[in-house]
Image (cartoon, rainbow, N blue to C red; front, side, top):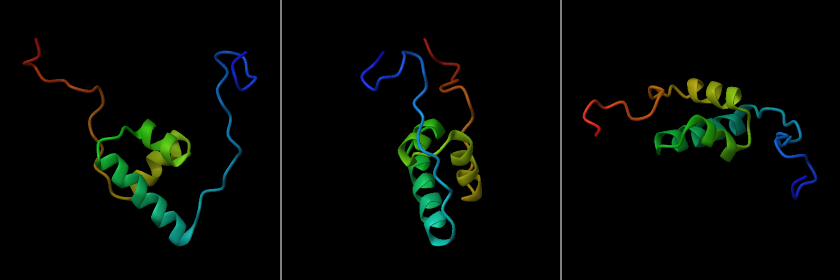
Length: 79
C-alpha cells in the first residue's frame, strides 16, 4: 500500500469531469496549446490540465497544433 491507501502499481483514479464547453473549452484548449508549444509533452500537458491523454490530444488538434515527431532526439551526430 502507498500513502493514498492504494496498492503499488494501481493507477490513480480521478473523479470524472465533463469536458467544458464554450469559452471555458476555448480557454482550456489555448492553455494546453501554450504548454505544448513551450516544450511539454502531451502526457505532461494532460497531467497539468487534469485530463486524459486522448482528450488532451484532441484539444491540441482542435487548436491546430503541429505535433512534434515521436521518439525524442533522433539526430545522427550523437556520440
